[in-house]
Image (cartoon, rainbow, N blue to C red; front, side):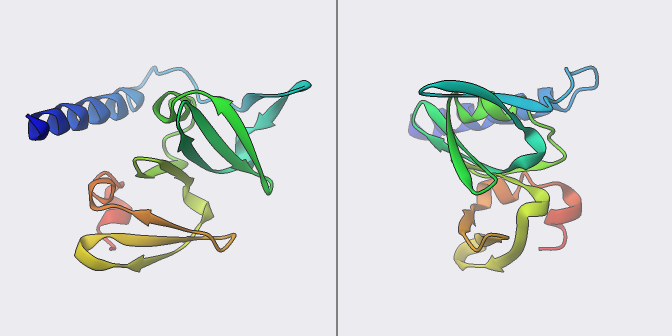
Length: 138
């Protein structure tokens, strides 16, 4: 039963990604509304370096700060330009030009080194979803 559930989840995730690629999709957002305790402001999408899941929230890393937004990771990244951001793990999305280096690890996984020095794992599952231009070079 567990294998079936994983297959269904993978197919749903792939379907959502493919739907996001369909022409006629709403334009990617240029700003995201961020609410903090005493104010709300717009954050330029160009400033976003990476996004991480945190339960019912996403952590948006931009300009050296982390902003919490109440949304799912899948829902949040649907607003972003799919050509600029890569989902590299079930919990992480990274701007393509923020990746500094890819280091091979064991069993087909990779370690991503980001421009700020932090590292994230690129799992085999998400390596298979990379654009062909990147995947073929690994």
